[in-house]
Length: 230
Image (cartoon, rainbow, N blue to C red; front, side, top):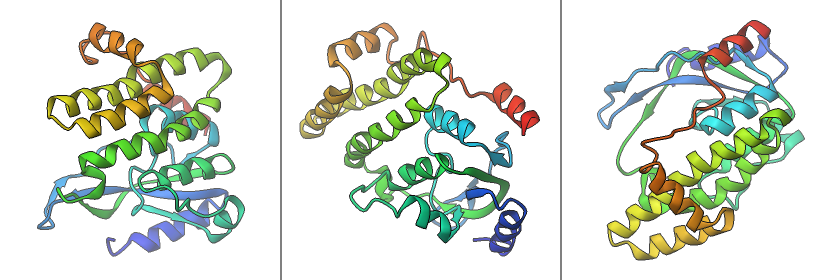
């Protein structure tokens, strides 16, 4: 944490007591502590209502991107429950989705955290991705159910053409690298969410998502409209 981290977060929560959690931007550092990825500009509003949070996370994943840059109030945990200990990878993502179902989320667009990136991180190990695939599918189904009714068809199509094909791509790469156990486990997860033969057709048609890409519904233009609304 940078020296002003807790003070800034505390001031933010005092200003916005309605939020269930808040997260800040981060500067990514390497093994030696050098900044290798300064925080980019983020158009997300300071206070993210539940409907917008559902849209952001459905199309872009965990809203905070990490767990080290999040602060929340004990009363929120008492209301929504504790982290799920049966989840190895996506427990933080699942918690943010659970919180955003009842509260707004705060966003501090300042890099208050130095986040270290290194090759030994558990989440970057190839065999951890299958676990992530299995755990996050139910999370995305929860977010899918929160999308506006008029956008459900689009959201379903996006999910299949984006997230499902990412899973399929991982399975194919595992096969090409000769990691057959990982490929088989990936196939089992994929089979539970869609028909592999249909995904094979989409994967070939889009040349591994290089063509016919479907854009996210949450873009800078949408964020600007929410900023005005908020």
